[in-house]
Length: 497
Image (cartoon, rainbow, N blue to C red; front, side, top):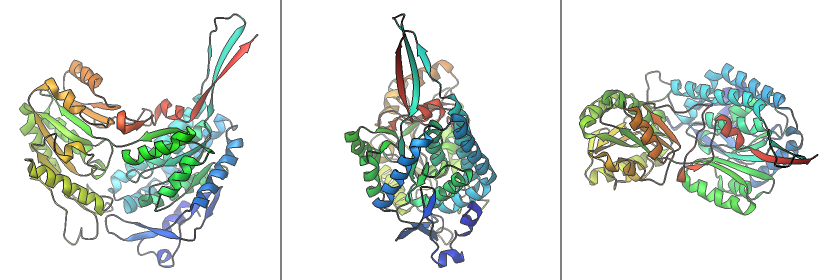
C-alpha cells in the first residue's frame, strides 16, 4: 500500500475505520498484522483515527532478528548506495509534504502551517545525511617508529533500537533513522503510541524508496515497557537511541548497562530565557512568544523560566501579553488556528497544577490560566495560553519542565547571581540570551551549563548543527557530523612495514 492509499484509510468518518482496518507493523520488508490493536486519536476532537497493530515481544525479537540478518550485507553497501536511498526518501517526503502534514495535524494536533514546517525539517535530515554518508572519512596518524603506520577508519555499530516521541512525530524519526542508515546500521524503531500513524507513513516512504528487507523495521504498541526491555537486553542490539522524558531515559540507560550497549539520550529541559537590561524588550518578548508557544509549548527547547531585568520587565510583559492574547486556540486544520491542543488530558492537568501552585505562592496571573471549555473545545485537550509573573524559584513551574502553553516570568534586579539562577536545574538542554553586548553574550554562553544557547536567536537548530544537552538532558548529539558519529565505531590499524 502506497502513502496515498494509507492516508485514505485514516479518519473518524472513513468506512475503512468502521470495517476495522488495521495499520500494520513493518518487519523484514513486510507489513504484518497483530492479534490485537489499539486506537490512535485526534487530540483536538477526541475522535479515533484508526486501529494500529499492537506488537508483542515475539514481534520485537523478529524485527531484531531481521535487522541483525540484514546488517551482514547492509554494512558493506557503498556509502554512495546508502546516500542514494536516503536522497530518494528525501525526494518522496518533499513530494508528499502536504499529505504528511495533514496527517500530523490530525494525529498530533499542531496547526497545519507548523506541521508543514516540521515535514520540511524532517526532510532536511534525510538530505543532510544523504550527503554526510559519503563523508565518513578516516585518517592516518604519524608513528614514532619509522617502520610503523597507523590508519583510523570507522565502522557501523550494528543493530540500532530507536524510540521516538510524539511531539515531533516525523522529524524525530528522520533525525535518528537518517544518520543510522547513512553510517551503515540497521534499525528497529518504536514510535510514540500517540503518533503511530505518522511513523507508519514515514515507513511507507522508506519502503517506496527501496531500502532492502530488514534494514528498517517498525514496531507499534500502546504499552512500550515490554518492548523496551527486549531492546535493552537483546545482545543483537548494539545501540539504543531514545528521545523522551529523563525518568524513562534513566531507566533505559540502566537496563542497557549490563550489556554495555551504546546509548544516546535526548531528554527533558528547563530552559532559561534571559533578557539583559540592554536588550530590546519588545524584540525579546516577540521572540519569547514564538519559542515558548512553539508546538503549544510541547517542545523540549521551549523556555521554562523567563528571567527579565526589572528595567525591561513591564515593557516585556506588556508585549508578551499582547502576543499571547492574540493567539487563536483550536483544531489545527482550521487556517485561523495558531495554537493547537495538548496531547492528552494528563498534560492539561499538569498545566492547571503548576498554575495553581504558582498562584498559591504569590505569582500573578496576567492572562489565561484555565482549561478551555465550550463546544469547540469540549472533546479535545485545550489549555488557554497563559502568562504569569512574579514567579519564584520555589514554585513547581520553575523546577519542573512545563511542556505546555504557560509563560512564567521571573523579575531580577542583580546580575551577580543570574547565572547561578539560570543553572539552578538538573537539566541542561537549551538556554536563550537577549543582549546587545557581544562580550556579555559570549561570557554568558560560556557560563551557562546548557548544550544549546540561542543568542538573540529563538531557533538555534538545524540538521547541520549538533543538537543535545548536558547533565540530565541527555547523552550524545543528533544532527551534524556528530550525529553520525553516534552510530560509528572507531577502528585502528597498526601496520609494521
